Length: 228
Image (cartoon, rainbow, N blue to C red; front, side, top):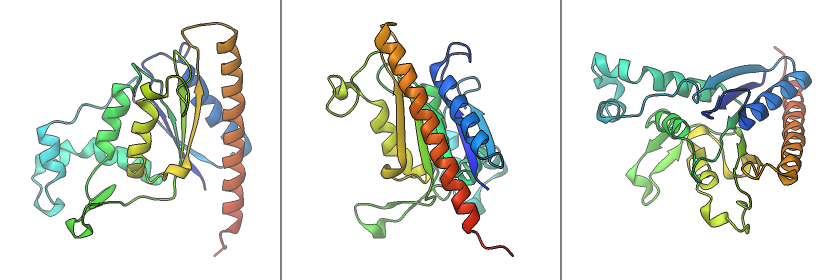
């Protein structure tokens, strides 16, 4: 059975948020095509996770067998968030561009997901590349909105795009390879003209198409699982 993890990071409420509109569209379209799919929702825009601090870092880098009782409590939310990522086959992420980068809520979530021994291992025997992801084979759909336009590679504002590279840099913590990141973006939001209207329509079409594609792949994979 396919499991979808829906992450909403927008600070806007449902009726004003374009990324929430897209994540809802993706989720509904996937469920329509694959009613057996399981959906986990985590609204970090509405309910942000707390920033990590020195106590979190101390607990996270203490071996599990040596942790004090307070450390388990400090890591409890992080463990729950990682369990959600681990369970997911597909992660759909509503990630608006704020000041050319990611929302603080999304960065906070990532900081809780990036955990030694849970989502990555660290071994200096690997030389200059000691980090190795633990999770793998997941798909990431990034549904974004941008006030301006031209943030794609080669675009006039590509040099200002700190959102997409940051997500791609951290995707291995989610078990996602670069090839399995699929980004749909609404642009021209601040211009509120016909270009924005066309961008919304195109993003909706692309979101529906991705959801149907993943639903079909999921059904095919389920059909290939031997009974018994």
